[in-house]
Image 1 (cartoon, helix red, strand yellow):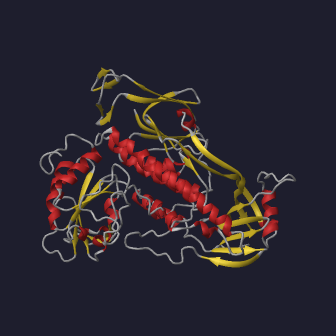
Image 2 (cartoon, rainbow, N blue to C red):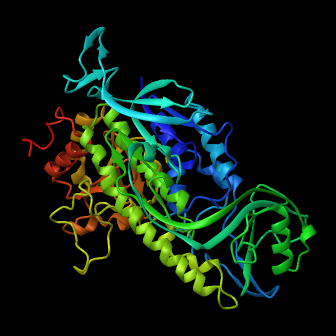
Image 3 (cartoon, rainbow, N blue to C red):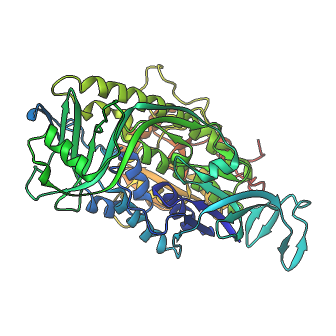
Length: 571
Protein backbone atom coordinates (compact mmCIF):
# COMPACT_ATOMS: atom_id res chain seq x y z
CA UNK A 1 0.00 0.00 0.00
CA UNK A 2 1.31 3.45 -0.92
CA UNK A 3 1.32 5.79 2.07
CA UNK A 4 1.61 9.03 0.11
CA UNK A 5 1.28 9.55 -3.64
CA UNK A 6 2.83 12.84 -4.73
CA UNK A 7 1.63 14.26 -8.05
CA UNK A 8 4.22 16.54 -9.64
CA UNK A 9 8.01 16.14 -9.55
CA UNK A 10 9.17 19.73 -9.34
CA UNK A 11 11.12 21.05 -6.34
CA UNK A 12 8.03 21.02 -4.09
CA UNK A 13 7.14 17.40 -4.82
CA UNK A 14 10.75 16.23 -4.67
CA UNK A 15 11.42 17.88 -1.31
CA UNK A 16 8.28 16.29 0.11
CA UNK A 17 9.20 12.90 -1.33
CA UNK A 18 12.72 13.07 0.13
CA UNK A 19 11.40 14.07 3.54
CA UNK A 20 8.83 11.25 3.62
CA UNK A 21 11.20 8.63 2.23
CA UNK A 22 13.78 9.26 4.95
CA UNK A 23 11.00 8.77 7.50
CA UNK A 24 10.35 5.29 6.15
CA UNK A 25 7.03 6.14 4.52
CA UNK A 26 6.00 4.22 1.41
CA UNK A 27 6.05 7.20 -0.93
CA UNK A 28 5.60 7.41 -4.68
CA UNK A 29 5.97 10.43 -6.93
CA UNK A 30 4.51 10.70 -10.42
CA UNK A 31 4.73 13.31 -13.16
CA UNK A 32 2.83 13.49 -16.42
CA UNK A 33 5.90 14.64 -18.37
CA UNK A 34 7.52 11.82 -20.37
CA UNK A 35 10.97 13.03 -19.32
CA UNK A 36 12.26 15.16 -16.44
CA UNK A 37 11.19 18.73 -17.25
CA UNK A 38 14.08 21.07 -18.00
CA UNK A 39 12.35 23.99 -16.31
CA UNK A 40 14.52 26.99 -15.60
CA UNK A 41 12.35 29.93 -14.59
CA UNK A 42 13.11 29.72 -10.85
CA UNK A 43 16.62 30.98 -10.15
CA UNK A 44 17.33 29.15 -6.93
CA UNK A 45 16.63 28.62 -3.25
CA UNK A 46 16.51 31.50 -0.80
CA UNK A 47 18.18 31.41 2.62
CA UNK A 48 15.38 29.52 4.36
CA UNK A 49 15.14 26.96 1.57
CA UNK A 50 18.90 26.40 1.84
CA UNK A 51 18.36 25.48 5.50
CA UNK A 52 15.75 22.94 4.42
CA UNK A 53 18.04 21.52 1.73
CA UNK A 54 20.77 21.32 4.36
CA UNK A 55 18.47 19.27 6.59
CA UNK A 56 17.81 16.93 3.65
CA UNK A 57 21.56 16.54 3.13
CA UNK A 58 21.91 18.20 -0.29
CA UNK A 59 22.90 21.79 0.53
CA UNK A 60 26.60 21.26 -0.13
CA UNK A 61 25.87 19.90 -3.59
CA UNK A 62 23.51 22.78 -4.31
CA UNK A 63 26.12 25.31 -3.20
CA UNK A 64 28.75 23.64 -5.38
CA UNK A 65 26.48 23.57 -8.44
CA UNK A 66 25.27 27.15 -8.07
CA UNK A 67 26.70 30.59 -7.54
CA UNK A 68 26.18 33.43 -5.12
CA UNK A 69 23.67 36.15 -6.09
CA UNK A 70 25.33 38.59 -8.46
CA UNK A 71 25.65 42.37 -8.47
CA UNK A 72 23.19 43.98 -10.86
CA UNK A 73 24.54 46.15 -13.67
CA UNK A 74 21.82 48.44 -15.01
CA UNK A 75 21.71 50.21 -18.36
CA UNK A 76 19.72 52.98 -20.03
CA UNK A 77 19.81 53.60 -23.76
CA UNK A 78 22.42 50.81 -24.04
CA UNK A 79 24.82 52.51 -21.62
CA UNK A 80 25.62 51.35 -18.07
CA UNK A 81 24.24 53.82 -15.53
CA UNK A 82 24.39 52.07 -12.15
CA UNK A 83 25.57 48.96 -10.38
CA UNK A 84 23.98 47.59 -7.22
CA UNK A 85 24.79 44.63 -5.02
CA UNK A 86 21.63 43.94 -2.98
CA UNK A 87 23.63 41.73 -0.60
CA UNK A 88 26.59 44.05 -0.05
CA UNK A 89 25.61 44.77 3.56
CA UNK A 90 24.56 41.22 4.38
CA UNK A 91 26.73 38.64 6.08
CA UNK A 92 26.21 35.25 7.74
CA UNK A 93 25.49 35.39 11.45
CA UNK A 94 25.66 32.77 14.22
CA UNK A 95 21.89 32.30 14.13
CA UNK A 96 21.60 32.36 10.30
CA UNK A 97 24.64 30.97 8.45
CA UNK A 98 22.80 31.34 5.13
CA UNK A 99 22.21 35.06 4.77
CA UNK A 100 21.30 34.93 1.08
CA UNK A 101 20.06 32.48 -1.52
CA UNK A 102 21.88 30.68 -4.30
CA UNK A 103 21.60 30.91 -8.07
CA UNK A 104 21.07 27.50 -9.64
CA UNK A 105 19.02 26.33 -12.61
CA UNK A 106 15.80 24.70 -11.48
CA UNK A 107 16.47 21.62 -13.59
CA UNK A 108 19.85 21.19 -11.88
CA UNK A 109 18.28 21.50 -8.43
CA UNK A 110 15.72 18.89 -9.44
CA UNK A 111 18.52 16.57 -10.60
CA UNK A 112 20.15 16.82 -7.17
CA UNK A 113 16.87 16.11 -5.39
CA UNK A 114 16.05 13.17 -7.70
CA UNK A 115 19.45 11.66 -6.95
CA UNK A 116 18.83 12.08 -3.23
CA UNK A 117 15.43 10.44 -3.55
CA UNK A 118 16.91 7.55 -5.53
CA UNK A 119 19.21 6.92 -2.57
CA UNK A 120 16.08 5.96 -0.63
CA UNK A 121 15.02 3.60 -3.41
CA UNK A 122 12.35 5.92 -4.83
CA UNK A 123 12.31 7.11 -8.44
CA UNK A 124 10.00 9.49 -10.23
CA UNK A 125 7.38 7.66 -12.31
CA UNK A 126 7.30 9.66 -15.53
CA UNK A 127 4.53 9.80 -18.12
CA UNK A 128 1.81 9.19 -15.52
CA UNK A 129 -1.10 11.60 -15.57
CA UNK A 130 -3.73 11.56 -12.82
CA UNK A 131 -7.27 11.88 -14.20
CA UNK A 132 -9.42 10.77 -11.26
CA UNK A 133 -9.49 10.90 -7.45
CA UNK A 134 -12.02 9.26 -5.15
CA UNK A 135 -11.76 8.86 -1.40
CA UNK A 136 -13.60 5.93 0.12
CA UNK A 137 -13.36 3.25 2.78
CA UNK A 138 -11.90 -0.11 1.77
CA UNK A 139 -11.83 -3.51 3.34
CA UNK A 140 -8.47 -4.06 4.98
CA UNK A 141 -6.41 -7.11 5.74
CA UNK A 142 -4.66 -6.77 9.08
CA UNK A 143 -2.70 -9.63 10.64
CA UNK A 144 -4.18 -11.95 8.03
CA UNK A 145 -7.82 -11.11 8.80
CA UNK A 146 -10.32 -9.07 6.83
CA UNK A 147 -11.87 -6.08 8.59
CA UNK A 148 -14.47 -3.62 7.39
CA UNK A 149 -12.70 -0.30 6.82
CA UNK A 150 -15.95 1.63 7.36
CA UNK A 151 -16.41 0.14 10.82
CA UNK A 152 -12.79 0.33 11.98
CA UNK A 153 -12.01 3.55 13.81
CA UNK A 154 -8.28 2.97 14.03
CA UNK A 155 -6.19 0.03 12.91
CA UNK A 156 -2.53 -0.75 12.54
CA UNK A 157 -0.92 -1.97 9.32
CA UNK A 158 2.82 -2.63 9.49
CA UNK A 159 2.95 -0.24 12.43
CA UNK A 160 1.28 2.57 10.51
CA UNK A 161 -1.93 4.18 11.69
CA UNK A 162 -4.88 4.49 9.34
CA UNK A 163 -8.64 4.54 9.60
CA UNK A 164 -9.78 2.58 6.56
CA UNK A 165 -10.12 5.64 4.34
CA UNK A 166 -7.99 5.57 1.23
CA UNK A 167 -7.81 7.42 -2.06
CA UNK A 168 -8.41 5.70 -5.38
CA UNK A 169 -6.18 7.38 -7.97
CA UNK A 170 -7.02 6.82 -11.62
CA UNK A 171 -4.34 7.38 -14.25
CA UNK A 172 -4.76 8.28 -17.91
CA UNK A 173 -3.84 4.76 -19.00
CA UNK A 174 -6.92 3.50 -17.14
CA UNK A 175 -5.20 1.96 -14.14
CA UNK A 176 -6.55 2.75 -10.65
CA UNK A 177 -4.22 2.58 -7.65
CA UNK A 178 -4.68 3.26 -3.95
CA UNK A 179 -2.88 5.55 -1.54
CA UNK A 180 -3.54 6.64 2.00
CA UNK A 181 -2.84 10.29 1.12
CA UNK A 182 -2.38 12.26 -2.10
CA UNK A 183 -0.51 15.56 -2.41
CA UNK A 184 -0.91 17.75 -5.49
CA UNK A 185 2.39 19.46 -6.28
CA UNK A 186 1.50 19.72 -9.95
CA UNK A 187 1.73 23.43 -10.58
CA UNK A 188 -0.58 26.33 -11.28
CA UNK A 189 -2.75 24.28 -13.65
CA UNK A 190 -2.99 21.49 -11.07
CA UNK A 191 -5.09 18.51 -12.11
CA UNK A 192 -5.33 17.47 -8.47
CA UNK A 193 -6.81 20.82 -7.47
CA UNK A 194 -9.35 20.68 -10.29
CA UNK A 195 -10.31 17.09 -9.50
CA UNK A 196 -10.88 18.07 -5.88
CA UNK A 197 -13.10 20.98 -6.94
CA UNK A 198 -11.04 23.49 -4.97
CA UNK A 199 -11.38 27.10 -6.09
CA UNK A 200 -8.38 29.11 -7.27
CA UNK A 201 -9.53 32.69 -6.96
CA UNK A 202 -7.51 35.73 -7.91
CA UNK A 203 -6.52 37.86 -10.85
CA UNK A 204 -4.42 37.71 -13.99
CA UNK A 205 -2.78 40.93 -15.13
CA UNK A 206 -3.00 40.58 -18.91
CA UNK A 207 -0.99 43.76 -19.43
CA UNK A 208 1.95 42.62 -17.25
CA UNK A 209 3.71 40.22 -19.60
CA UNK A 210 7.27 38.94 -19.84
CA UNK A 211 8.91 36.51 -22.27
CA UNK A 212 11.48 34.12 -20.85
CA UNK A 213 13.93 31.49 -22.00
CA UNK A 214 17.37 29.97 -21.66
CA UNK A 215 19.79 31.29 -24.26
CA UNK A 216 23.41 30.93 -25.29
CA UNK A 217 25.48 34.00 -26.08
CA UNK A 218 28.80 33.89 -27.85
CA UNK A 219 31.56 33.42 -25.32
CA UNK A 220 32.80 36.71 -23.92
CA UNK A 221 29.76 38.67 -25.08
CA UNK A 222 29.04 39.87 -21.50
CA UNK A 223 30.71 39.81 -18.12
CA UNK A 224 29.41 36.69 -16.38
CA UNK A 225 29.99 38.12 -12.91
CA UNK A 226 27.04 40.49 -13.34
CA UNK A 227 23.27 40.29 -13.80
CA UNK A 228 22.73 42.69 -16.72
CA UNK A 229 19.48 44.70 -16.85
CA UNK A 230 18.45 47.09 -19.61
CA UNK A 231 15.37 49.16 -18.77
CA UNK A 232 14.20 51.60 -21.42
CA UNK A 233 10.96 53.48 -21.85
CA UNK A 234 9.90 51.13 -24.66
CA UNK A 235 10.92 47.80 -23.14
CA UNK A 236 13.45 45.82 -21.16
CA UNK A 237 15.94 42.95 -21.42
CA UNK A 238 17.49 41.08 -18.48
CA UNK A 239 20.33 38.56 -18.78
CA UNK A 240 21.63 36.54 -15.83
CA UNK A 241 24.36 33.89 -16.30
CA UNK A 242 23.24 30.32 -15.60
CA UNK A 243 25.68 28.69 -13.14
CA UNK A 244 27.45 25.59 -14.37
CA UNK A 245 27.47 26.75 -17.99
CA UNK A 246 30.05 28.65 -20.02
CA UNK A 247 27.68 30.48 -22.33
CA UNK A 248 24.18 29.95 -20.87
CA UNK A 249 22.02 32.85 -19.70
CA UNK A 250 18.54 33.34 -18.30
CA UNK A 251 16.77 35.71 -20.71
CA UNK A 252 13.80 37.81 -19.61
CA UNK A 253 12.31 40.69 -21.55
CA UNK A 254 9.27 42.73 -22.29
CA UNK A 255 7.60 41.08 -25.31
CA UNK A 256 7.48 42.26 -28.87
CA UNK A 257 4.01 43.47 -29.80
CA UNK A 258 1.95 43.50 -32.95
CA UNK A 259 0.37 46.53 -34.59
CA UNK A 260 -2.54 46.44 -32.12
CA UNK A 261 -0.24 46.31 -29.11
CA UNK A 262 -0.82 42.64 -28.35
CA UNK A 263 2.19 40.65 -27.08
CA UNK A 264 3.78 38.28 -29.57
CA UNK A 265 4.76 34.74 -28.68
CA UNK A 266 8.48 34.35 -27.89
CA UNK A 267 10.80 33.07 -30.63
CA UNK A 268 14.56 32.85 -31.01
CA UNK A 269 14.47 35.52 -33.74
CA UNK A 270 12.30 37.70 -31.51
CA UNK A 271 14.86 37.39 -28.72
CA UNK A 272 17.58 38.46 -31.17
CA UNK A 273 15.59 41.52 -32.17
CA UNK A 274 15.00 42.46 -28.51
CA UNK A 275 18.70 42.00 -27.79
CA UNK A 276 19.71 44.28 -30.68
CA UNK A 277 17.08 46.88 -29.78
CA UNK A 278 17.99 47.34 -26.11
CA UNK A 279 21.63 46.29 -25.74
CA UNK A 280 24.90 47.06 -27.45
CA UNK A 281 25.05 43.45 -28.65
CA UNK A 282 24.20 42.27 -32.12
CA UNK A 283 21.32 39.86 -32.45
CA UNK A 284 23.84 37.38 -33.84
CA UNK A 285 25.40 37.18 -30.37
CA UNK A 286 22.48 34.98 -29.35
CA UNK A 287 23.24 31.51 -30.73
CA UNK A 288 20.54 29.37 -29.10
CA UNK A 289 17.21 29.87 -27.38
CA UNK A 290 15.06 27.20 -25.73
CA UNK A 291 12.47 26.75 -22.98
CA UNK A 292 10.67 29.78 -24.38
CA UNK A 293 7.59 30.87 -22.48
CA UNK A 294 5.34 33.83 -21.83
CA UNK A 295 4.80 34.85 -18.21
CA UNK A 296 1.75 36.78 -17.07
CA UNK A 297 1.37 38.01 -13.52
CA UNK A 298 -1.12 35.74 -11.79
CA UNK A 299 -2.10 36.34 -8.18
CA UNK A 300 -4.23 33.40 -7.10
CA UNK A 301 -4.66 31.14 -4.10
CA UNK A 302 -6.63 28.00 -3.42
CA UNK A 303 -9.48 28.57 -0.99
CA UNK A 304 -8.30 25.55 0.99
CA UNK A 305 -5.15 23.45 0.99
CA UNK A 306 -6.79 20.18 2.00
CA UNK A 307 -9.79 18.07 0.98
CA UNK A 308 -9.99 14.95 3.12
CA UNK A 309 -6.90 12.88 2.42
CA UNK A 310 -5.66 15.10 -0.40
CA UNK A 311 -3.46 18.18 0.01
CA UNK A 312 -2.14 20.96 -2.22
CA UNK A 313 1.35 22.45 -2.07
CA UNK A 314 3.43 24.88 -4.09
CA UNK A 315 2.00 26.47 -7.21
CA UNK A 316 -0.96 24.11 -7.05
CA UNK A 317 -2.01 26.05 -3.94
CA UNK A 318 -0.79 29.57 -4.70
CA UNK A 319 0.76 31.63 -7.50
CA UNK A 320 1.97 35.20 -7.37
CA UNK A 321 4.27 37.75 -8.94
CA UNK A 322 7.87 36.67 -9.52
CA UNK A 323 9.21 39.72 -7.67
CA UNK A 324 11.35 38.52 -4.78
CA UNK A 325 11.81 35.01 -6.14
CA UNK A 326 9.39 33.39 -3.69
CA UNK A 327 7.48 30.99 -5.95
CA UNK A 328 9.61 27.86 -5.78
CA UNK A 329 10.76 28.74 -2.27
CA UNK A 330 7.26 28.97 -0.83
CA UNK A 331 6.54 25.55 -2.33
CA UNK A 332 9.67 24.02 -0.79
CA UNK A 333 8.63 25.42 2.57
CA UNK A 334 5.08 24.07 2.12
CA UNK A 335 6.58 20.62 1.60
CA UNK A 336 8.79 20.86 4.68
CA UNK A 337 5.80 21.82 6.80
CA UNK A 338 3.61 18.99 5.52
CA UNK A 339 6.22 16.23 5.39
CA UNK A 340 6.88 15.81 9.11
CA UNK A 341 3.19 15.92 9.94
CA UNK A 342 2.33 13.19 7.45
CA UNK A 343 5.33 11.22 8.69
CA UNK A 344 4.26 11.32 12.33
CA UNK A 345 0.68 10.35 11.51
CA UNK A 346 1.71 7.47 9.26
CA UNK A 347 4.14 6.16 11.88
CA UNK A 348 1.42 6.18 14.52
CA UNK A 349 3.21 8.80 16.63
CA UNK A 350 0.51 11.46 16.14
CA UNK A 351 -3.21 11.62 15.63
CA UNK A 352 -4.65 12.57 12.26
CA UNK A 353 -5.74 15.95 13.67
CA UNK A 354 -2.12 17.07 13.36
CA UNK A 355 -2.68 17.28 9.59
CA UNK A 356 -5.21 20.07 10.14
CA UNK A 357 -2.33 22.35 11.11
CA UNK A 358 -0.85 22.26 7.59
CA UNK A 359 -3.56 24.51 6.19
CA UNK A 360 -3.77 26.43 9.47
CA UNK A 361 -0.12 27.40 9.16
CA UNK A 362 0.62 27.58 5.45
CA UNK A 363 -2.51 29.26 4.08
CA UNK A 364 -1.82 32.54 5.97
CA UNK A 365 1.80 32.39 4.83
CA UNK A 366 0.67 32.03 1.22
CA UNK A 367 -1.75 34.95 1.59
CA UNK A 368 1.03 37.10 3.02
CA UNK A 369 3.33 36.04 0.18
CA UNK A 370 0.78 37.13 -2.41
CA UNK A 371 0.61 40.54 -0.76
CA UNK A 372 4.39 40.82 -0.38
CA UNK A 373 5.21 39.90 -3.97
CA UNK A 374 2.51 42.18 -5.36
CA UNK A 375 3.92 45.06 -3.34
CA UNK A 376 7.49 44.24 -4.45
CA UNK A 377 6.35 44.10 -8.08
CA UNK A 378 4.77 47.52 -7.70
CA UNK A 379 8.01 48.87 -6.19
CA UNK A 380 10.08 47.35 -9.01
CA UNK A 381 7.88 48.71 -11.79
CA UNK A 382 8.16 52.13 -10.22
CA UNK A 383 11.94 51.84 -9.80
CA UNK A 384 12.69 50.88 -13.40
CA UNK A 385 11.00 54.00 -14.72
CA UNK A 386 14.06 55.90 -13.52
CA UNK A 387 17.59 55.39 -14.86
CA UNK A 388 19.47 53.17 -12.43
CA UNK A 389 16.39 51.35 -11.16
CA UNK A 390 16.37 47.58 -11.36
CA UNK A 391 15.35 44.26 -9.89
CA UNK A 392 17.10 45.01 -6.61
CA UNK A 393 13.93 46.88 -5.66
CA UNK A 394 12.25 43.48 -5.25
CA UNK A 395 14.73 42.26 -2.64
CA UNK A 396 14.02 42.90 1.03
CA UNK A 397 14.76 40.96 4.24
CA UNK A 398 11.29 39.43 3.86
CA UNK A 399 12.38 37.60 0.73
CA UNK A 400 14.99 35.49 2.58
CA UNK A 401 12.21 33.46 4.18
CA UNK A 402 14.01 33.51 7.53
CA UNK A 403 11.30 35.60 9.17
CA UNK A 404 8.41 33.29 8.31
CA UNK A 405 6.81 31.85 11.44
CA UNK A 406 3.56 30.55 12.87
CA UNK A 407 2.89 32.44 16.09
CA UNK A 408 -0.87 32.12 15.46
CA UNK A 409 -0.71 28.32 15.16
CA UNK A 410 -2.32 25.91 17.61
CA UNK A 411 1.12 24.24 17.68
CA UNK A 412 2.74 27.42 19.06
CA UNK A 413 2.43 27.31 22.84
CA UNK A 414 3.41 30.58 24.51
CA UNK A 415 4.40 29.93 28.12
CA UNK A 416 2.89 32.15 30.81
CA UNK A 417 6.37 33.25 31.89
CA UNK A 418 7.72 33.83 28.39
CA UNK A 419 8.93 37.38 27.72
CA UNK A 420 6.54 39.39 25.61
CA UNK A 421 7.41 41.99 22.97
CA UNK A 422 7.67 45.41 24.54
CA UNK A 423 8.44 44.21 28.06
CA UNK A 424 11.92 45.74 27.99
CA UNK A 425 13.77 42.48 27.29
CA UNK A 426 15.58 41.73 24.02
CA UNK A 427 13.39 40.48 21.18
CA UNK A 428 13.85 36.76 21.78
CA UNK A 429 12.18 34.30 19.41
CA UNK A 430 8.61 33.34 20.28
CA UNK A 431 6.76 30.05 19.95
CA UNK A 432 6.08 29.51 16.24
CA UNK A 433 9.19 31.37 15.05
CA UNK A 434 12.02 29.76 13.13
CA UNK A 435 14.48 28.18 15.55
CA UNK A 436 17.78 30.08 15.46
CA UNK A 437 20.98 28.28 14.57
CA UNK A 438 24.11 28.62 16.72
CA UNK A 439 27.69 27.33 16.41
CA UNK A 440 28.74 25.04 19.25
CA UNK A 441 30.93 22.01 20.07
CA UNK A 442 29.89 18.37 20.19
CA UNK A 443 30.43 17.42 23.83
CA UNK A 444 31.33 13.83 22.96
CA UNK A 445 33.79 14.38 20.11
CA UNK A 446 34.98 17.97 20.52
CA UNK A 447 34.14 18.64 16.86
CA UNK A 448 32.63 21.93 15.77
CA UNK A 449 28.94 21.68 14.97
CA UNK A 450 25.82 23.84 15.13
CA UNK A 451 22.30 23.51 16.44
CA UNK A 452 20.72 23.04 13.03
CA UNK A 453 22.92 19.96 12.63
CA UNK A 454 21.48 18.70 15.90
CA UNK A 455 17.96 19.33 14.60
CA UNK A 456 18.64 17.66 11.24
CA UNK A 457 16.58 14.61 10.45
CA UNK A 458 12.99 13.63 11.02
CA UNK A 459 12.57 14.20 14.75
CA UNK A 460 11.36 16.71 17.32
CA UNK A 461 14.23 18.08 19.44
CA UNK A 462 14.03 19.05 23.10
CA UNK A 463 16.89 21.35 24.10
CA UNK A 464 17.82 21.72 27.73
CA UNK A 465 19.77 24.75 28.96
CA UNK A 466 21.29 24.72 32.45
CA UNK A 467 21.60 21.98 35.10
CA UNK A 468 17.95 22.32 36.05
CA UNK A 469 16.90 20.90 32.67
CA UNK A 470 18.52 17.49 33.20
CA UNK A 471 15.55 15.86 34.95
CA UNK A 472 13.06 16.80 32.23
CA UNK A 473 15.44 15.64 29.50
CA UNK A 474 15.73 12.24 31.17
CA UNK A 475 11.95 11.91 31.41
CA UNK A 476 11.46 12.95 27.79
CA UNK A 477 14.09 10.50 26.57
CA UNK A 478 12.55 7.65 28.54
CA UNK A 479 8.97 8.31 27.45
CA UNK A 480 9.38 9.54 23.88
CA UNK A 481 12.64 8.06 22.67
CA UNK A 482 10.85 5.66 20.34
CA UNK A 483 8.38 8.25 19.10
CA UNK A 484 10.57 10.52 17.05
CA UNK A 485 11.81 12.79 19.86
CA UNK A 486 15.48 13.48 20.61
CA UNK A 487 16.97 15.37 23.54
CA UNK A 488 20.03 17.59 23.60
CA UNK A 489 21.65 19.18 26.63
CA UNK A 490 23.24 22.54 25.84
CA UNK A 491 26.09 23.17 28.25
CA UNK A 492 27.46 26.63 28.92
CA UNK A 493 31.22 26.93 28.63
CA UNK A 494 31.56 27.53 32.38
CA UNK A 495 29.69 24.35 33.39
CA UNK A 496 32.18 21.83 34.71
CA UNK A 497 31.94 18.16 35.57
CA UNK A 498 30.82 15.16 33.54
CA UNK A 499 28.82 16.08 30.49
CA UNK A 500 26.69 12.99 30.18
CA UNK A 501 23.06 12.00 30.10
CA UNK A 502 20.45 10.85 27.59
CA UNK A 503 20.60 12.03 24.02
CA UNK A 504 23.06 14.44 22.49
CA UNK A 505 25.05 17.13 24.24
CA UNK A 506 26.76 20.25 22.92
CA UNK A 507 28.84 22.99 24.51
CA UNK A 508 27.78 26.56 23.84
CA UNK A 509 31.41 27.64 23.96
CA UNK A 510 30.84 31.13 22.58
CA UNK A 511 27.43 31.78 24.15
CA UNK A 512 25.60 32.07 20.82
CA UNK A 513 22.93 29.50 21.67
CA UNK A 514 22.02 31.15 24.98
CA UNK A 515 21.95 34.55 23.29
CA UNK A 516 19.75 33.31 20.45
CA UNK A 517 17.23 31.52 22.64
CA UNK A 518 17.13 34.02 25.47
CA UNK A 519 17.38 31.44 28.22
CA UNK A 520 18.08 34.15 30.76
CA UNK A 521 14.58 35.52 30.29
CA UNK A 522 13.07 32.98 32.69
CA UNK A 523 14.10 34.52 35.98
CA UNK A 524 17.56 35.37 34.72
CA UNK A 525 18.79 31.85 35.52
CA UNK A 526 20.16 30.93 32.11
CA UNK A 527 18.18 27.69 32.27
CA UNK A 528 15.18 26.48 30.33
CA UNK A 529 13.60 23.94 27.99
CA UNK A 530 13.01 24.58 24.30
CA UNK A 531 10.98 22.23 22.08
CA UNK A 532 11.93 22.47 18.41
CA UNK A 533 9.60 20.97 15.81
CA UNK A 534 11.00 18.79 13.00
CA UNK A 535 10.72 21.73 10.60
CA UNK A 536 12.97 23.90 12.82
CA UNK A 537 10.23 26.04 14.33
CA UNK A 538 9.86 26.66 18.04
CA UNK A 539 6.97 24.89 19.68
CA UNK A 540 7.49 25.79 23.32
CA UNK A 541 9.96 27.68 25.50
CA UNK A 542 9.50 26.89 29.20
CA UNK A 543 11.35 27.14 32.53
CA UNK A 544 13.52 24.09 33.12
CA UNK A 545 11.42 22.88 36.05
CA UNK A 546 8.12 22.99 34.17
CA UNK A 547 7.89 19.34 33.13
CA UNK A 548 4.11 19.61 32.93
CA UNK A 549 4.16 22.13 30.08
CA UNK A 550 6.76 20.13 28.17
CA UNK A 551 4.71 16.96 28.59
CA UNK A 552 1.50 18.68 27.50
CA UNK A 553 3.16 20.09 24.40
CA UNK A 554 4.72 16.80 23.33
CA UNK A 555 1.37 15.09 23.77
CA UNK A 556 -0.21 17.79 21.59
CA UNK A 557 2.46 17.37 18.93
CA UNK A 558 2.75 13.59 18.97
CA UNK A 559 -0.82 12.97 20.03
CA UNK A 560 -0.42 9.48 21.47
CA UNK A 561 -2.32 8.62 24.62
CA UNK A 562 0.35 6.14 25.69
CA UNK A 563 2.68 8.96 26.68
CA UNK A 564 1.26 10.05 30.01
CA UNK A 565 4.05 9.68 32.54
CA UNK A 566 6.02 12.91 32.33
CA UNK A 567 5.57 15.47 35.03
CA UNK A 568 3.10 13.50 37.12
CA UNK A 569 -0.65 13.62 36.50
CA UNK A 570 -1.74 14.35 32.95
CA UNK A 571 -2.96 17.90 32.58
